[in-house]
Image 1 (cartoon, rainbow, N blue to C red):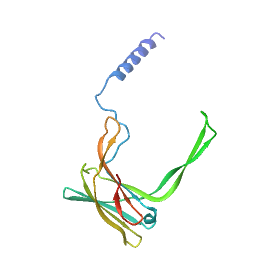
Image 2: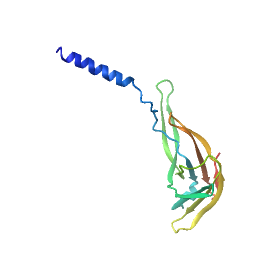
Image 3: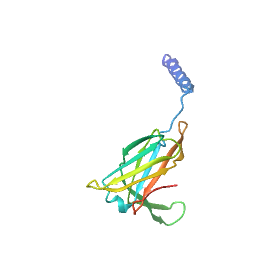
Image 4: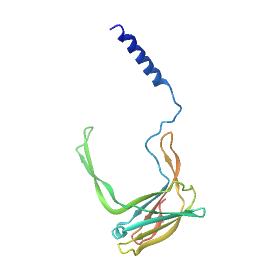
Length: 166
């Protein structure tokens, strides 16, 4: 037993010292705010959309990307049972009929960009084909490795008009 004690003490000492050293690297959260543009399509239009794409232009160049639209939902409050510190409350998700997507644009600048939204039905006929100028908002990405990144949000209303969301 006397031989194990010095080995144990040495191991614990080395472990403690290793824990106290710093490599100088930042600790980053696994959260990021990507550069890009989000889109929400009204339920009236969304039910007819088969394909969606977005063309974003700045400084004389353009990028066209498909948009993967997904069904949207909202949280509905189902209320609380009784009141007090042990209160139990509930909520549920409810489909809205809208569809939403996001296009990542790693090189998107913080200034205005021209955005063309093209939505087509099953036959390939364009339901929406509109262009607008969007001034992205600067969004903070949390954590030591975060930073301020440009993001924009647009909507397509029931009348097929594309609008920027402030």
